[in-house]
Length: 395
Image 1 (spheres, rainbow, N blue to C red):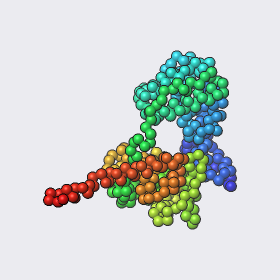
Image 2: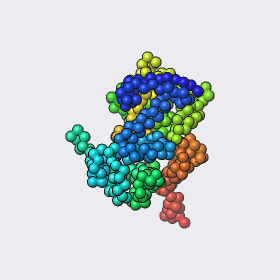
Image 3: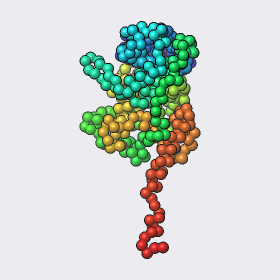
Image 4: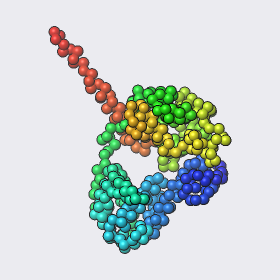
């Protein structure tokens, strides 16, 4: 166990949120950047809670114990949006701000009021700085908001804050089951096109090519890690140089549900790509900004790459493989799907793939097996032997 005292630089997210420098006193085995990320999520939650009515304090405590931090933040955002809707779009409260809604007003909310809100979310507008922004929520997004409100009202009923459980009156929202839509993943030949592009700089625009000359080893290492391990975007973005123990052939990642996982290093492809990046291209110590010295993947400015930067990088190279526009390229999650379907297609155990990708339920992993089954069906669909025996003159 180590104790590190880290001053978060002024231009990090922590500085922007607080207006102050943040000192991280790390007494755990977790890297400082993971501790900082948890701090930022908890701070976001606390800020949202201050905007909401004080009679929800018991519910806030419940969520800390019942939900993962990122889920808790999303639920709080959805609940805040619902309360802003109440103040701006209904006569259910006289409050001008969510924090001023009274418990008496909250007790008058009925199931149909929530249904009206969920219908409102299909298409709504928000005016900011003289510009009207129009939003359209998918059924999946509306279902998440419904889930947040269901958790809220069930908890308030259990605590006696509201007189009845109104959640049974919420209308169902039809959401596609994962198996009902096509899983988007790169085929093996498309993976090779993508890796050729990142290795040679082919199919890039002149501007992209100039950046590629400075980042090609970094970009290739990122793609290889996604394709080999099916990492989540957050897992890859948080990787540090100290995450890797090359002598033992392993590296550590921090997953959902506060889990740590040791991953074995692929000795040829992955290790080679990482060494080429770290030894030949990664910025030197004097080029790296304070606080990001241990970050594995760095921007040209010497800062830990953001999730947006990594996402744009993946979309660029996958668009080349797919022969489409940059905007139509795949997200990092599609490379996770590519890893899963490729591993299963090569005959690996579905349970081993589940363990590698950290799927909570094997049914999620089975979707990729079904995807490979469909690929086999397509492969043989037009391959008919009967035609060979139905030629004229043959019996």
